[in-house]
Amino acid sequence: MKATVPITVASLKVACSQCNLVELCLPFGMSESEIDRLDELVGARRKIKRQQNLYRAGDPFEAIYAIRAGSFKTDVLLEDGREQVTGFQMTGEMLGLDGISTETHSCNAIALEDSEVCVIAYSKLEELSRVVEGLQLQFHKVMSREIVRDHGVMTLLGSMRAEERLAAFLLNMSQRFTARGFSPAEFHLRMTREEIGSYLGLKLETVSRAFSKFQDEGLIAVQQKHIRILDIVGLKRLIQHPSPRP
Amino acid sequence: MKATVPITVASLKVACSQCNLVELCLPFGMSESEIDRLDELVGARRKIKRQQNLYRAGDPFEAIYAIRAGSFKTDVLLEDGREQVTGFQMTGEMLGLDGISTETHSCNAIALEDSEVCVIAYSKLEELSRVVEGLQLQFHKVMSREIVRDHGVMTLLGSMRAEERLAAFLLNMSQRFTARGFSPAEFHLRMTREEIGSYLGLKLETVSRAFSKFQDEGLIAVQQKHIRILDIVGLKRLIQHPSPRP
DNA sequence: TTTCGTGGTTGACGTGGATCAACGGTCCAT
DNA sequence: ATGGACCGTTGATCCACGTCAACCACGAAA
Image (cartoon, rainbow over all chains, first blue to last red; front, side, top):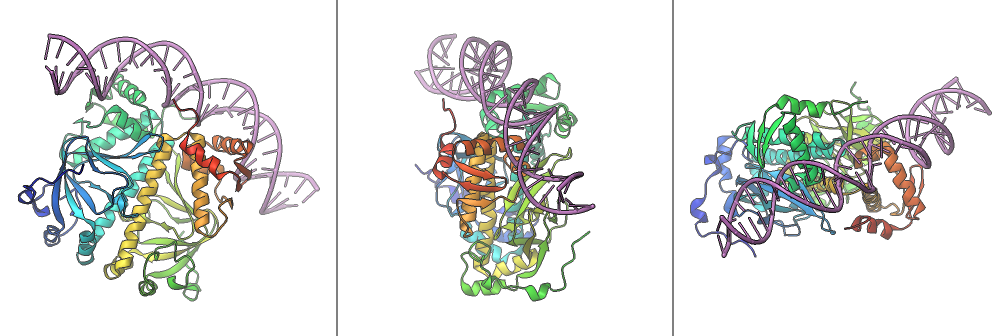
């Protein structure tokens, strides 16, 4: 069932130093000479087709992954079949950090579109980060950022109402697309309403209704997965001043 | 406003190798010789009185902390005054990991009772973990475990109903008390209903009602903050088979 | 002891979002 | 083009939890 690596993979190898994601990805903040040393770190690259798993909960942990192209979701399945999407990941972001603690992955990573990742053997990462100071710091920052991000999601799930959650989600997406050089105001969501709902702790109907409401209010224009943000200030206001305050 | 370190602190210094938390804390899994080298890592210890902050959101990040005695909560405050408790921490657990990413703490850490922490200067940790392999691995595992834990909370907040959340919370507390050598079935909660509610994304009244319901059903005995678990299997069943399934 | 403040419980009622259901749009494969 | 699978939208109804309010338990201070 394991996707076999295409024979051409070695020839496709691209150094971190040549990669245009350098400012988003693991190398961020490292010196040029340090980045050059990273090239030994990224072994192969691996292509994942839409809907396929990069890894599954229970898989032995061997590597972490940097997304080179495409996007992913991570999710956890409860015994009774309920799914909780724990995150959406875009280019330059890391996957697999959950596996370090138990040496087994604790969630599923699934491609939302045909994607490609850089495979970083964890043993090599440990080894190299003992000598390359910038790598050690940067890796710690990546993990810490993940923790902070999760706290943000917990805040969203624990204390925001449906429309606030969706507004926060859209603003977050906008900000991440911007960081990747895309328009802050117009983008294409790769996930379904159901996946958004799972991530935000809402049902897909609620997500759909909130999209429609935002459109009626002139905050956004929605056409299926294509989103245009018309009033970013209005969206931000939604988060800071929830509907009626006592 | 900063709590000053008592003059006697140096004399109170206790080596990791002598600490009875060694199996829960950062040294877990390290060899004896490695643990000996940790002693240079833990600079001072610091006492925090109940309700006082160990650090606040916005504080510059310099150190992480291992809880030696007592317990803490971490929370995030939204602009409009809403509070989200992001975690409860017990002895042997680490605090402050959120600060690494931006070199600024992103949440508040508040003592739930009079407590004491070991202060671990982050710069020293980085330095030492470059030479002590076991420390590097263990530190990565601690961060990864935090990420996995947060995913668990996200699952709870995103896809469980009130009683499932409280059952999961109680089982988690029980398991953590057990790991510390206390009774799995009888313990004292250090946090208020409101704090539990914030953590679980519920109002304090809902938490209180769920406690009462569990008591009526013979699952637990509640007396204020004192909890006795009478039917652990029943609690577990609650999580796996939520009320009515379609 | 009384008083006061904080935290916890319980009841009555209201509502945001879940649920159930019907239908429409888009993209494939045939 | 046609049928079917999936995805999204919208309306009607329901109910779990929030809200509001009253009251109680406990510990600290006077």
